[in-house]
Image (cartoon, rainbow, N blue to C red; front, side, top):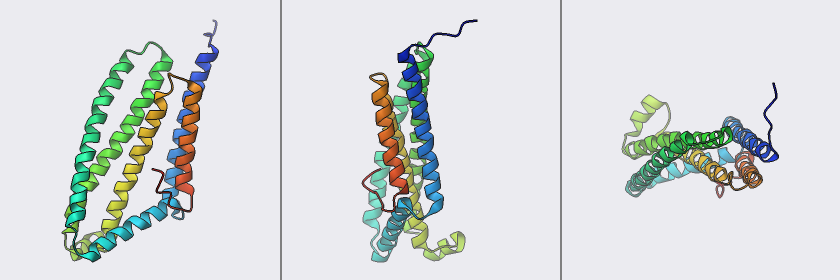
Length: 212
């Protein structure tokens, strides 16, 4: 039985998709380890967000901030709707794929969309909850959460921004995947650059807020 012949172009495409999968796994593992270590850029960003939440509560007037989160929900809902519609179109393309390489390529796009969808849902859930917490009595939070209102609100704000970063990561990887049909080599290059930026953002000792 003869093995199927693989052309150089097909080999390059397969290799590029394997590199993409490896890069995505590296970014996920790095982000998870950064979360546990607590002495890196992710921890610095968390400290900034929690300090902001404490400053807002101490200032007394939380109405403008609550309005910001309500407006944010409108934007997130629009992003979620666009993602659902796009996923439907990509799913149709998957069914119309003519070869296994195209199926894997489109499958990776759907996986990234699913990741973005999940983190968007988590961000919407928490962002809906935050305006309510602004008006909850602090003693009630201390009773049930075993932490101050400032600490609890800071943690919620921190969670929303972590979900936002994860959503943006997935969307950037989708952009990289769009270059796959144009040039697998360009696709590899963009994937490697994105992964480097994401990993550098998480393991650096500075906040790196300028990089999602």
